Image (cartoon, rainbow, N blue to C red; front, side):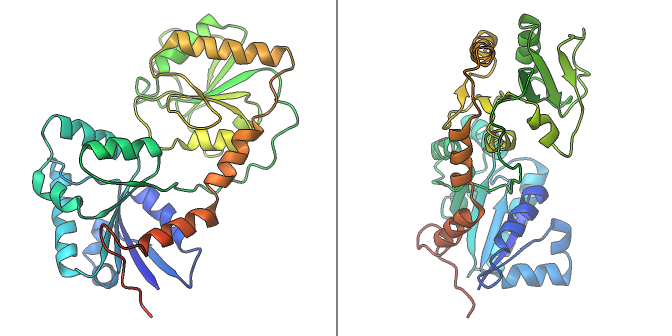
Length: 325
């Protein structure tokens, strides 16, 4: 039995714990919060683990929170030296680490210790970015259970663009490029989830904001293409959902069966949308079934679980965990 305690970012830690526990005979995974470590049960759980997994909390940060977490992590490692250490990198944690590394602001002690651990990244481009800092990572997809059903035989009418832009970070999600595209292409409907558009000074008739949505399926059902343009990203969940639904995707990261458009390149975005719109109008834009097959194969839960467990049992950085009988 591999006993895993996950520490760090709660949302993804809880989600990964739920995925890992789909193998109850092989894995016992539990997220323990920093507050939980202060309880007898949480501390016992961490000290009994044969894998300590750190999610989203980067080593070497100079913030008080980063120093606190590094200190707790070091204490757990010292008190439970038999446990394998695994860092799972998600996206923003890589961006902040890279920025601090280039500015010479990472604390050398935690980084030196982290280089001896095992590292996973949830997108292939994160592996390259981490390599610059001296951290050798392996790309292992973080699966997201999807239940979107089969795509339609034809994309819906009218041609509709769906994107995600929260009000608090419109620049990061390239809201200005979306706004400009909506103004330049008045014949295309744009739908935005995640925010109310409070950052837009003058409303645009074909640009509609729906705020935060718990269920994206109704929006995907009427979308032809999903746009995700970001300054930096892990493996975007909206991209996976769009491909699973058989929709076309415009993305600022290169991956199979998407159209790549650079972040903050409005002419490239408008050209890509015009091409897709013209194909749709001519009846030559079928659902993106190749993208759907790719997502179903790459992010299959059981396949990812096999990869997780095989890598944990593999000798190397962080050593293989001593499994309980």
